[in-house]
Image (cartoon, rainbow, N blue to C red; front, side):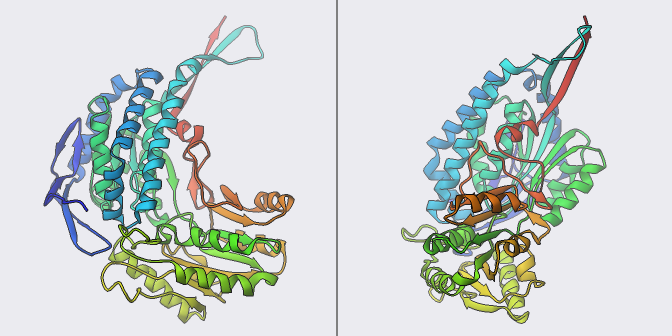
Amino acid sequence: MINFPTTLDGLYINGQWSAGREHLRVINPATEALLTTVNGGDEQAVDQAIAAASEAFKRWSQTTGAERGAILRNIANGVRDGREHLMKLQSSNNGKPQFEAAIDVDDVIATFEYYAELAEGLDAKQDSNVPLPSDDFSARLRREPCGVVGLIVPWNFPMVTTAWKLAPALAAGCCVVLKPSEVTPLPELELAAIIAESGLPNGVFNLVCGTGLAVGAPLSADPRVARISFTGSNAVGVQVMQRAAETVKGVSLELGGKSSLLVLADADIDLAVELACGGAFFNAGQMCSATSRVLVADELEEEFLRRLQKRAQAIRVADPFDADVEMGALVNQAQYQRVLGHIDRGLSAGARLICGGNRPTDLPRGYFLQPTVFTDVPLDSALWCEEIFGPVVCVRSFSSEAKAIVLANDTPFGLVASVVTADAVAADRVANALQAGLVWVNAPQVIFPQAAWGGYKQSSIGRELGPWGLAAFQEIKHVIRAV
């Protein structure tokens, strides 16, 4: 365990740590104990951070990709050196088990290393020739950083969503103002401390802890910010987009999901059960990619439900530092009550509870909830239609592949989906028909920095990761010259 100081500085601006005027209480979700208080910022701090970033951009935007790549590698190495401590911060502040925290930290390392490689390749591509249909003109293409960017990240994957945004922004040559979640600022503060020792010039990276109203709103609206990249709820995403529209700045949004796992008639049932549990209960279901709807072929439904119930009831919910824990706590009391409210409304709507739905009897404190499985869920109920962001999965059978695809696509979201089948041709056919940005076939929810992240419909605007994540922070300039 970690002994935290009573208070922590919540501002890192122009290379200096300082205390803001807003006091943010940081709670351990597994014990409900106060970890520390972070002194976060307000509109004045945001103004100072943007000013520092704007000044630093004059120099940082002129660096080479190789120079930027070297610093990104320094950050990756710093995270690697602090891996164990960062894992403990994740579990203490977020409530996720240590094995999940390890996955998160390793993802951060891989992301910074990947964008270091992309940055190092930018110089050779700069000022590339563009073929034209006329010999009277020549053209060259430049990829330039878009400017100062605001990054607003959520509490469910601290440092991970930050890395997905920060690494490509720095690789592109942008300067950054980061607003971490006020719920889970501790891993982000430690990441900022690592970045402070990476050789990054002052003002290129700035961090302002605080609430959405005090920090996120002015950051989104400021005309000096060229782009906002936000991950979070659809409701807040709409507000971010509205404020960004006032100054016509670029916006990248990664929002909600209500994703399905399709279990076809020839599926391996044990594999399907494991993928259902992983998709619904990893990170206590607090994922925009949670496969919270399982569609199973009629002939497999009874056996699938029997095995799913047995597996879900066997999942050990415990303190995130316990050696054999499989699922930790929800992030805070507000989220805990929100999920319980969804369960109650689902029961009132006539859904049948297979298992779970309550606090584990051996955990009287902390925001713990049993893995919860429903069936016979009405198609118009909130349980089936809305993002729950908790360890709750709804199971429904289907009589044909076509009906399964209709059910899966009948949602305003389109982030991810999963398919379980022994038939490779059917797998491709179904994957191609699903309206989702990423489809897994017979696979857990593995994510690689090289592959795009984002979805259709109301799940996303733009894409993160891969070269698409870098392109989000670049402007395209063509220079055409008379020969």
